[in-house]
Length: 332
Image (cartoon, rainbow, N blue to C red):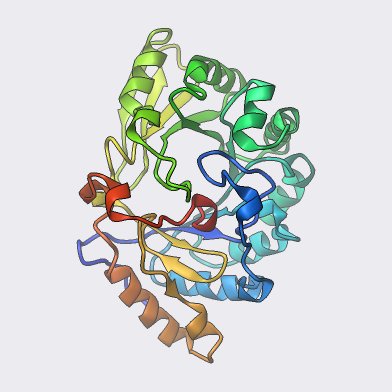
């Protein structure tokens, strides 16, 4: 089963995002704005921990090195630390991290650390309690902040903050979020609003570009460019005083598709080679129909080879993607 996961443009997949559930207790504007209309995946369609581990073991044998567990909200999945332990035990996994809304993090951080989780990225889009509630659909800010503190306390590293920057929603908090991250000594990532809300609410005038964000931050701080490493999503900046790190993830204004090295496994077993992939390759048809590990690997290799060029080659995504799959169903 050895051999790299190469696509038709010569890109090699080394990173995997695993969505363990499509369910989330939040309903963020840019992800799940009409939660009451959502039909969750049937339980029987969701991959078991054993199935996920088998698929990941196959992927690691083909060159996957870094794994990030996502959702929905991954900590809504029962006993997630059992999966973390199983994934950590796979020879060849170099890093194992998780993205979370932090609602359950205060109570789960120690168990996740003990199971082998390396670090967490917390979604935090406002430091104002009422605004946080409007954006996320939950009055949860104090609990989220406690979760961040607990993650730091138990030694999860790195701890990062992801914040989707939206014009007219939270653009007046850019500097506040930067100062918060610097005080906590956590890395901050601003992400451009993408057309992955599932409702077609995205528009260019709601998107705050990375360039504009850097201009806002530069009004108060002197930034030191560090560039973007091959395959990474964030263009990094340090601060002249040495405190903190800022990352700008700019899939819309400065796409990084040409060196993308990520693939995604959805909660129901679909392999997505790109966030904008519309070919939902079903790995369950192999795993649940008696397919061998070699057959699974062959199918995966063919799916990855057909990876789309990416958003960099889709100037206006909405025009060509009339029925986008929402972010909660993709796995971030």
